[in-house]
Structure formats: structure tokens, C-alpha cells
Length: 471
Ligand code: UGA
Image 1 (cartoon, rainbow, N blue to C red):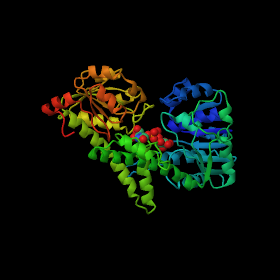
Image 2: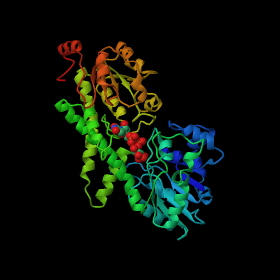
Image 3: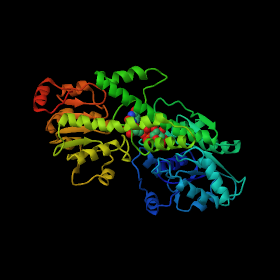
Image 4: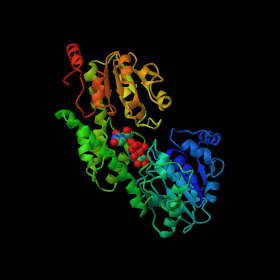
């Protein structure tokens, strides 16, 4: 099928490349000439596993790039709208880009087309898009508007797209559903998984992908409600971790105990310094605003956001507990991205924590496998040094902080880190290390929701020196 994807941000770029991978003819439209020519030259603007391979495979064949929305729409049967919906001051999503695209598309509708919302949008957006298109000259009966929310995660976006837990199609008639079902057919009839050149997916994936057809409003709500639920799970385990700290329990044991209940599950139950990224913070505020607008005070979401914010403050208190005063101290920081597998630092708790440390007079040496370039654009160069390895970050530091759950940090040489540090203090905001390993290597090790590790000889030394508070 001929498909246009408008917007070559995270979702648009991945969706476009994956639609081409499923055998469709795809035009990716963007109004940013710099981005377009970079894509045309073969550059990949985001750090995402398998994306370079897919772009290489399909660029100039089934995947082309354009700045001409009207022409692309004229050539396509389905038009996916994947432009940004950034948060406004009020917490509501700014839908002006979506409206703008709807106007552009309207003028190009000549034969039947399905316009599909892929961006995360509040309920009723599909209806507004329909109205804007009619007002701007799209002939009645010549188009339908659908909602097809995307559930991919950064870092695993391509695999999430091609091996989905479910495909949600929100539409208001069978004709629209049929167009979208045809687009996803290689996933829902399982033929993609027979392809010898397929992108390899998770070992335990059970194809075919289930398809859920709903009304457009339900589909829009499914997306917001899914993200809100996942964020709630994270805030819930963070709150439990805080109680564990108060009573001397271990959140890892509690997590195993509750996650083993199949109704709860282990996933998205990892405590830490809170969720970040371009989705959860924005989508929770937007969902909160949607609920309020429609007469419901969704206070549960306020608490989810509050716990999330508080996690950063609690982490900073741990740093102060270990180091006492912060002015003039040097800290090593492992991790800048909002999560592992990405170079994205939007709403990254790591960046917020570093900014607080800098404000209190710390100097920071930091390493991240992918996000240093982006972080350098927002962190002041005078007090932050970007280095090439975890060992350099630890070198001469008063403490080492772990702020992103990069799996590669798990295999660092702890003996070497111990030698590099000025004091053997590690404060782990992602519970990456086992307490017994840290004990064996002689670290003072503070983590989230687990008893602190303080080797006997260090306890004596540091308590006398006033370094450790009541831990
Ligand atoms: C999230 C959702 O997981 C996707 O399903 C959704 O499609 C996407 O938002 C979106 O709306 O576009 P993403 O923001 O890429 O995906 O990242 P997640 O893997 O969900 O992680 C979000 C944050 O939660 C990260 O900061 C991560 O470190 C944190 N997290 C995650 C935890 O603190 N604990 C966990 O157990 C899981």
C-alpha cells in the first residue's frame, strides 16, 4: 500500500521505516529541510537499535523523503500523522501541529484516504481532525479519520513496532478498519515472522500480533491510560521502596514477592530515581488535563507525578547523607539518558539531578554510552567534564552516582572503580549492582529501597569523620 507518514520524529521515523519493512511504499514527510537532507544523505538522527539497518535497506527503494505534504497525500491511500504534541503551560497537549497538518492534508484529498493519528493525542482529537479537514475543503465521504496509537519504547522501538503486544485500531466504520488491517497484515497473519531477513525479535514472542478494533475515542484513551498505568506502576514501586528504606526491608525481595502474582507481573516494577522521557511526564499531565476538562478530577495521577518528583529529591538527600556538604566536591556520574538504549535526555532525571548538584557547588565528571553529545548542549561546560569511560568518571571522585540503567554499567570492573575513587562510595539510583558484590569490593553502597552496605572498617572511619548520617 502507498503510505505517507507526516513527521519524522521518533514515532514517525520508526513507523515509516517499519511500514517499508512490511512491504509498503512509504513517503516520510517533514518540513525541516536540515532533517530531511540528513535523512536523504543516509544519516540517522536518533540512537535506536536496528533503525540504521532498516533505513539502509529501504531508503531510495520503498522509503522516500519529501517536504511536500500535498503531493505525498495525493499518492497515498493512508496518511499517518506523527507530528509533535508538546505540553503547554497548562499541562494540556499543544495540538496546533496536528491541526496544521490536517489543513494541509485536506486540500490534497481527491480520492478515498484514511487519515490516521499516530501521535499521542487527547480523546476527541480524531473528531477535531475530521472537522478541520471538512472546513478546509476535504470532500465529505472521501476520507475517514482513525486513531492507531503507538506503544513503542525508545531504545527498543523497532522491535516493539514489529513484535507488538497488540495493535489498536480506533475507527468508526468497517472500511477504515480494513485499510489499517491490511497495513498490519504481515504482522497479524504472521508472514513477517517467516521472512528470513526479518529483524530478529524477542525470544519469547508469540506471533501473530493481536489486533484490537475500537472506536476512535477508545483508542485515544487506550494510549493515555496505558502510559498512565505504567507510570503508576513505577511510582507505586518507588513508594514501596521508600517504605522499605524506613523499615529496613529489601525492595528487590518485595518486588519479587509481588511481581510473581501473575495479575501484577514483574515488568515496570523497578524502583529508581523516577521516570523521565518525552512521554510519561507529558502524557500524565495531558491525561490529567483531559480528565479535568471532561469533569473528572483524576487525583491518582497527581500523586503518581508527586512521587516521581520526590524520588529525585530523596536521591539528592542520599548524596548529602554520604558526602555531607556538597560545595567543592567532585562526583562521578554514570548515565545521562532518561533510560538505557537511547541518547534521549528529555526530562531525564539524571540531568535534573546533575543540575541540582551543580547548583550546590559540585563538580561533575560523567560518562554515558550514547547521550553525552546531547547532554553537552544543556549542561554548563565549566563544571561538567564528559569522559570516555566509567573509570575516568570515577577517577578522583568523592562518590560515584549511577543515574541511568545502562546494562553495560553492570559489567564494569568494580575493583578498578574502587581504585579510581577517592572514597569508595557508590550511590546507585537504578539498583544495578548486587549488594553482596558491592560489599565484597568494600564499597559504601547506597541504593533505592535496599539496606545500605557499609563495610565495618569504613563505617568507623566515615561515622567519625561525620560523612555518614544515620544510615
Ligand atoms: C513509554 C512507554 O513504555 C511506551 O509504551 C510508549 O509507547 C512511549 O512511552 C510513548 O508514549 O511514546 P519510553 O518513554 O520510551 O516508552 O520509555 P520507558 O521504557 O517506558 O521508560 C520510561 C521511564 O521510566 C524511564 O525513565 C525509565 O528509566 C523509567 N522506568 C521504567 C523505571 O523507573 N522503572 C521501570 O520499571 C521501568
